[in-house]
Length: 115
Image (tube, rainbow, N blue to C red; front, side, top):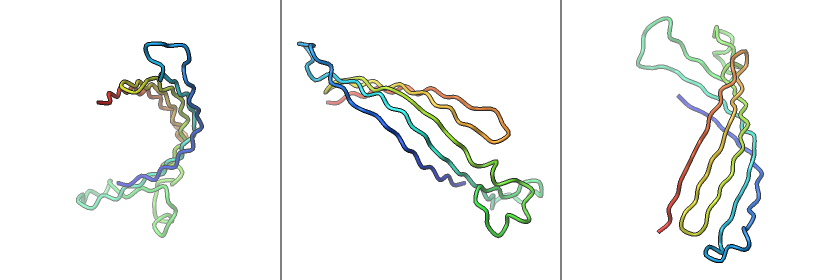
């Protein structure tokens, strides 16, 4: 299985002034768009119902019963990172749109400690 992904994001880091105990605190909001293409070619399976699928249009596209557009995904995401020099926290959400299918949502939470 293989996946091609290209993301474009925009964000900015703001310093949090006025915190005497932690003068280097910041928060960074960001948002973006991603485009994903996937493909799979089972080599170890000889079941006739299992066939190769791909988002790429190639030589096998004419013979494939699967529409290549079904394996192309659009993803929207947004999040914020808050932290300082020793501790950082990040939370983000994303929505992945599938052709002729339901949208998939996700939430991601991260914590980083520098030492």
